[in-house]
Length: 582
Image (cartoon, rainbow, N blue to C red; front, side):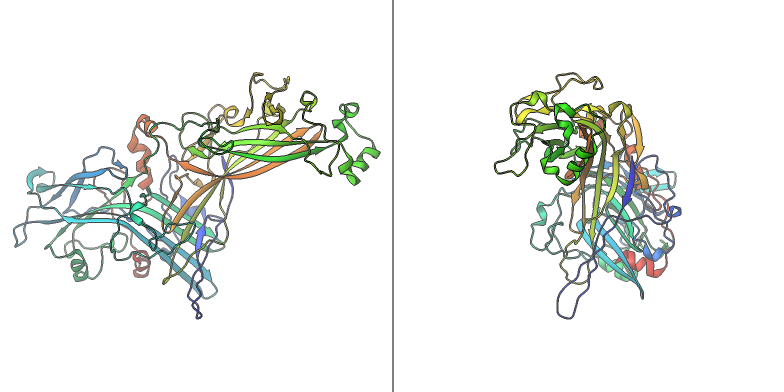
């Protein structure tokens, strides 16, 4: 699988004197920055670390950091969580040496969506930021500690247990932006945010004509050892500002010892792999469960539709001139190419996804100016074969984001995307397959054909099954397990919508048909939802930690493990840190 092109759309925003408002948002990059900025292992999907030439242009995710005075261990061996799960573990700190006689161990679990869009112009750069706090659980641990012997000496252990909410939690949060109503996003101005399910972890970056955008969704667990139990805001104010795990390295002896653990949180998928329903019972018309039905009208005009010219390789000059100057006078074959494509596609599905095509002959409507249609509703047996000569299927990835400045309205003015080619070339052995025909959209008739190895009972040509098409987070597969990595190392994330980030996908297909020596190209597109692997499939995966820990390797300082975070954030200048924090 390859990525043929990628584009980014930015919308910028500023307040004008007349009170009107402009917008700035992003939906996919045109091209990546230098490859040197993206040197990391892509053997499995991960959140990439972007090493920008200018740190000021980077919005770091919260890295894993460990204080020598605070150790955090998680109860789960493979700490992969769902909304609604409980995060439990133990915090280890030195025995109390504070005058109060007790350690003030503080635990915090929070999630947020952040966006940074950088617009270049002749006079410099504009930074547009958007922040959403999804929830924030903060408390001191009150259970009596237990003294335990560790490799670092005697420590007090404090158990903790915090439940991840299932939906956005209303509340007043510092650094939480208001988001007004916009059709492509959720809003926290008019909607009841407590009904909005939480998204999973996510990361995206893109470039377009010198502009840049980054966005992410992250879940963070923090444990700190505080000198007293004053409100957290007072402690931060006293030390000169909020915790800055992504900023300059802080001397814990003079500040608040803090250990930070980024968590992997994914959205719950279906219990078992989805089953595509083609009966049409679960939707209006012909649409069934998880599938969309599209129809593209095709009209073929050629003298070869007449029996006396059917075998002619070359038509005479007279016939060619008539084809050019009087096409409406030529015999024609009118039909719909019926395409049944997934409305929902599941990553890592054990079976290929369907992509069915069939031909539905049509009669001319009353008052039609076209004459000579070879199909009158009764002579289907004499209709010519429609053969597949080429097939290209693309999954369009549309990552959109919006940032804000002041109180603004938002709207996206154009949609651009990454093209992830699922199947770029029809194997030679499949060229010439006959597309099954549905007579008048009712009974099914299929031509036998020597080049077609399918059984004669098939009612459609399922290119998805024949090509064994499947999608994973990092690549597609086709035929006998042929693996094609996504170009630019893009990975697929489940579709989701939040207050400042919206990720959606669409199919784009191009089918080349051959009819009586003429070539017709049918192109179409349709929106598709991408969902994660089923819970059954997740359980069958060996080494769940190995599959998901790489998502956090792009976070500076994270060791990919499930215990306490390790490492420290890289040095960034004060302006970088200010941009990141704001």
